[in-house]
Length: 237
Image (spheres, rainbow, N blue to C red):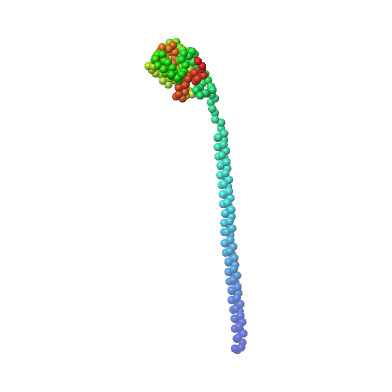
């Protein structure tokens, strides 16, 4: 009886060993299968990240192109603005060192005859009995004669002086201001606009030149500096 039991025990042990090996083999198969799936899942996000980076690069490229387009448009606008021509008023009379003309023509304030010309040097004044400069032109004119505006302008002031008599000061434009001195009557007031040839008054006497022939004492200043009226008006003695 003892001899029959030994082979049975050996068979059971062999079967048990086979079963254990099968279990171990199955466990290994399951383990490696799981690891393979997890590795596959980890790689997928990496691939997605690379595609996302590619999209970001494309967006940056689009922004740069837009910025260049805007800059080009701005430059074109600047060029067109600079290219616009500027309009200037044509000169009506050739300008020189002594004149900035308002118009191309100046009218004489009274007669054309000059009895005393412009002089920055000292000359004898018979009435005052001394030597002084004569920064004006004395135009011959009879007492009571009409005195006219040499050009369009704005009356700045009307006043009376012990030396010059009644004075009308007119701004004729182009920084030219004229003084009409020695008037008897005045037809204009400060703030009035006058036109060329308009009667602004009648001639009286220039007190500090009373011994001279009857005349209009006519002074001009250009940009605040006394100048020869004949040069400004383009006239000659």
